[in-house]
Length: 232
Image 1: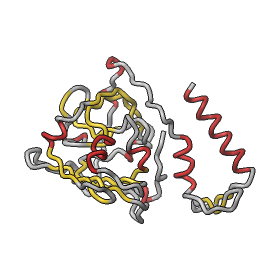
Image 2: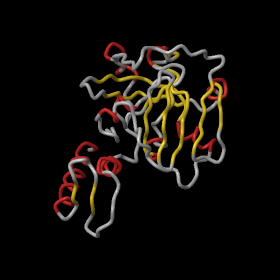
Image 3: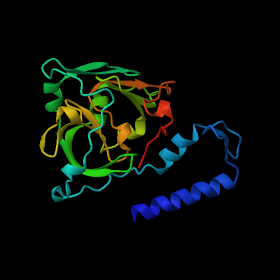
Image 4: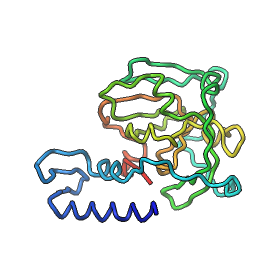
């Protein structure tokens, strides 16, 4: 049923485009039927298609540990869990710096979902961690906040829209398949969310920065030509 709903939405988008939405080759919406300047078309379309409801969990028996491929940007960084702190800053009222003990005391959310890679493979994985929206609540984003940036220990960087960041199934995970998250899979903290493609799900996250504008450096792969929204 969800798949059919998405097909209808895409058909509606094409109908709206025929009614007056004009798009240039660089991916920017030049104007809509009433002449207003709009957001980049990939963000607009992605936000429109993003389901507000959580995607269904798979049973634990469906986990596919052998199908999860380990990709790294510059190899696995060395992180000392005893001194690790997650920083949340930017367009927030209350910047915070949280150690792992504090994060582990927050409600543990477990989900079994499919991770989909843009390279063409997928794997069903059980993730356990804390909802990103619970962490952001501690920092109290300003009313102007629209985007969330993620910095990683290996130099990788990503950005998401705020709505996707506070989706109920967007986690900063520290468990995988019922065990502690392995270093090669992003320990001590990585993004895990069934609503985004794999390249959006940063590993070894050390800092979360809330912004009111999308900065020129949007994401490692996006700056090399990948689509920014990366939604499923």
